[in-house]
Amino acid sequence: MAKWFETHLPKIVLAPSFIAVLIFVYGFIGWTAWVSLTRSKLMPRYEIDGFIQYDRLFASPRWDTAMNNLYIFGGMFIVISLVLGLILAILLDQQIRVEGAIRTIYLYPMALSMIVTGTAWKWILNPGLGVQAMVQGWGFENFKFDWLVNPDMAIYTVVMAAIWQSSGFVMALFLAGLRSVDTEIIRAAQIDGIPTWRVYTAIIIPSMAPIFLSAFIVLAHLAIKSFDLVIALTGGGPGYATDLPATYMYAMAFSRGDVGQAASSAMIMMMVIFIIVVPYLYSELRAKK
Amino acid sequence: MTDVSATPTAAAAARSQGAGMKTALRWGLYLILGLFAVYYLMPLFVMLTTSLKSLEEIRTGDLVALPREVTFDAWAKAWSGACTGIQCEGVRPYFWNSVLIAVPGVLISTLLGAVNGYVIAQWRFKGANIIFALMLFGCFIPFQVVLLPMARLLGLMGIAGTIPGLVFVHVIYGIGFTTLFFRNYYVTIPQELVKAAKVDGAGFLRIFWSIFLPLSIPIIVVSVIWQFTQIWNDFLFGVSFSSAGTQPVTVALNNIVNSTTGVKEYNVDMAAAIIAALPTLLVYVVAGKYFIRGLTAGSVKG
Image (cartoon, rainbow over all chains, first blue to last red; front, side, top):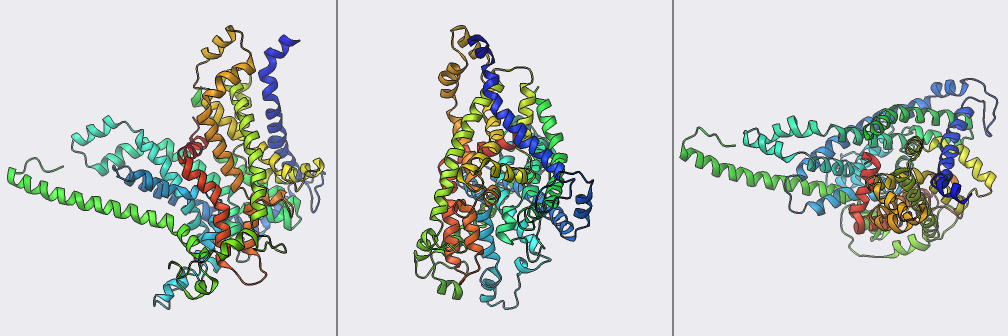
């Protein structure tokens, strides 16, 4: 008995965590998937009734806005963060004297809660006392910068705040990548008289393809899950102009009392992440073997 | 990079011109880097100066101007007097809620992650890799997909809206990451170590306790910092699973900022935001190296 216990101890120790993950991740996904196929309203019901919730979802103008916002927000956030992160990393990689201090400054927003970031930008961007009022105070009385309260532009304020928060992190990823490029190749290229910008575009940047991929995965993941930032910055408004799938789901689950809609929108979010992450995880785990 | 076919004098001239160009480029480079530093620091600067101004000065003055008269009234009010809806106790009680949620949440998830990583990396058995892959995938799910069933389960367990309930949720969804950290760390330790220790008669727990744990200080720091930042900055679980008295500081901050009663006190909002940000900022300043390691380990595994 003691012997059996000793040989199986590793499995016994791992079991509780594994069972917890099975139930609270996979079981719960199953539960949500199931409920998304029912007519649940205020309380979950369990009689399967086809894809009615998904039909309602795709017919809903609010969900339409949320998905459109996700494309705008996700696309701009990812592309600009990648470009800005790469540029900053290259600039910082030129034997800068105070590199450590600059890196610390660029990266600190990542340590903040999105709620704090949202609160700060909400104050800076508010038209009454923020940037608009400041520039008007300088004498440019026709200056207008009211994106925060303009339904057509509000989503771009979310993009601005999100880039501010995450671009330093992308910079750190790229900087680590730049440091691991083989210096022999770079030196050889320099001896051959190849201009520095060509060394970057032809050798260094292509060799960092894996870092582009992981940075993309992280940013895409952040974009799809974005919730706190929207809540703190715009509250999803004006109206529901800055709703994202995550805020739509939350509104349905906790303020509209529409469990079926909440479940089906969560499943769509899950699928979007699945499509992006699974091929990546699969290739990473294969590469390890 | 100068033209090699040029005459010696021309080459010398070109060289000195090149040197001038180089200095100019250097200055340009530092200027750009400096401007970006201003960009990243500006919101923090504005928050800090706004929190030190009186409301009167905020209304009449400039967004980026330094306070004419420094006052800490907003800080005092944010800490113990600002209203979140009907209650007016400031962020203090919620700050302590966050501490009470984060400390056990961090410790339990890190301990479980260490043991799990040790088993998966060093006591490989059939299926261990599949278990690891399944746990890893759990790190990537959008939490929206578990919110509804978790709300019901917490209700059934009788810990809905309590601090133990929030600790439970954070531990469950933190295990994936902590296991990942420790597994990737332990996988680099040669398996001969365990074999040799077994020959010497040491068992599973003994080997973990006396050999692996002492080697693990750096990764424990990474895991603790990562989990602390995650739990402290969390809003989704906090707003979904708390009740009136158990909200974490992020939720309280959002309530203060969006409370519609009375005059909008921007200086109090900013002071409350800085208070909510201080613990993770402090961790970042003190242990930035480990913070970055956690971030990159969470994204570029291995």
